[in-house]
Image 1 (cartoon, rainbow, N blue to C red):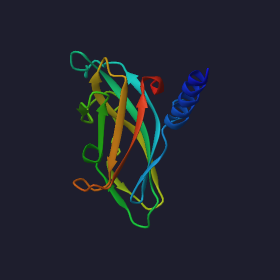
Image 2 (tube, rainbow, N blue to C red):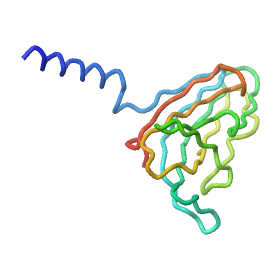
Image 3 (cartoon, rainbow, N blue to C red):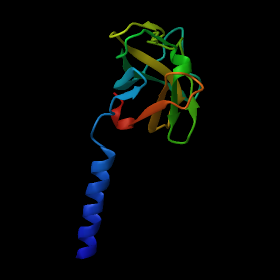
Amino acid sequence: MFRRLLIVFMLLIIVGCNGIDEPAEDIIVGEVTVTFDGARFLDDTLFQEAPEGKQWLAVDLTLENTGSQSQTITASLMFTLENQDGITYEHDQFAPDAQALDGSLSSGSTVSGPLTYAIEKNDTAWTMTFVLVPGTPESDSFSFTLDDVE
């Protein structure tokens, strides 16, 4: 009986710590806050089909500059998406529904839009990492699963 109670207690702790039903939290790197607004699969378009064995995944984000100076955002250099097997994907600027988050982000302003990736069809979980200054260790990441994708 004690063993069963202990197992139930440990499962409750694990579920609570992992936040299984909670959305990803905002991440802050330097003076830029990144909010995960959701993710969704996209259909191929007449002009852009996903490579064979892959599908489009759009990760919707909001970036906010909380600092006193403008920040230059280059999404392809600042964001990486990695699946559950450690495969890293590059943002595809020409994918369906791709919008540029690139450009100057003024002090106190926000910008929202998707970053789109051609991912493996059998992926079930991802980690997105944001680094404000490419090549430096200052970064943060959030994770999401297939359950978070519309």
